[in-house]
Image (cartoon, rainbow, N blue to C red; front, side, top):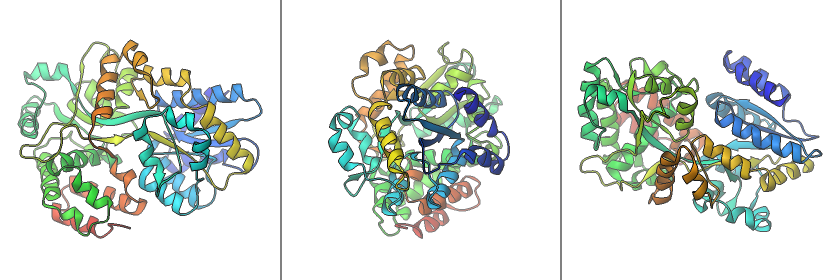
Length: 435
């Protein structure tokens, strides 16, 4: 059965990475028969993705899709290796942006521009903003799917009441809260620092709030020494000040996001706050007992920094998720994939399933469904962030090229471990601008 197979693949995540990848990849992409599809595991999102595949397979008995799941961090390595070796699955799940550009420029993924021209009703049914990260030099190389995922500052209302403090309205408030929580033996912020991209979210917001979206845009555009912008140095300095003040849970560098241990620290009251993606709401809802349903979870957008130039409506995260088609797939496999894009993605049942997990699907015309959900308040909050943002910045490790992104993530670890200075960080990143 599909469910038991997926469950076994999920269990494979508990064994060492090399063994898990071998187990997950054993089905292989292949070059004949039905299409293959790799995507991320972890509930509740995995169940929604699996449900869409099962529904398509049931409706198309002659066009089958075989799916395989991976943990987030392991997947990022596995998919790049497979694509580079010409062994990619037919359908490639991803985040678009700089990584997609690399694939497109190497001719490793299909140009879908003409397909979207022929299926204009598909494009017209999705958030227009979702196509930015799917587009390379004016051509579309990926199908936007799933949900919009801004990064959100979550907090535990019970812990705040216990300590007798209010949610932060500014960066100064954040720094003032740190010693108050530490005095009560509560970590101010949970952080799965071993996963690296979790640390990155702090820099994304601080760069924006202090210097505005132009600071990172200059980096994207390859401006020489853009990482040394004075506002960037200020942001890097502030995050180290938070580390030095013991703003993050002790041992954060050994906590992984894939295990959801960082989120457990929040809903069990061992941490007061957490900066994480909109997808975290569904995980906390599923794993946190009555934490969400009892109204104990609070959420807000990242507060302003005093004297900062950034627009408070700006956000960062994932405008959507993206499915590409391997250029190495057979004509039959490509047809199955395109049929899945046209009739298997974001259908009514999947849209409802995303909403039930506390996510805002990127399909237009869902306002009534969002309003009727038990998570209506959070969904409206997410929808407002995404729809009202003057700038919705894509996650840096996806916006940048794979080479620059890996250098970024390595140096973020060093920055948070206080082993390099802000100026050293900037120098190391300036060296890979445009690469």
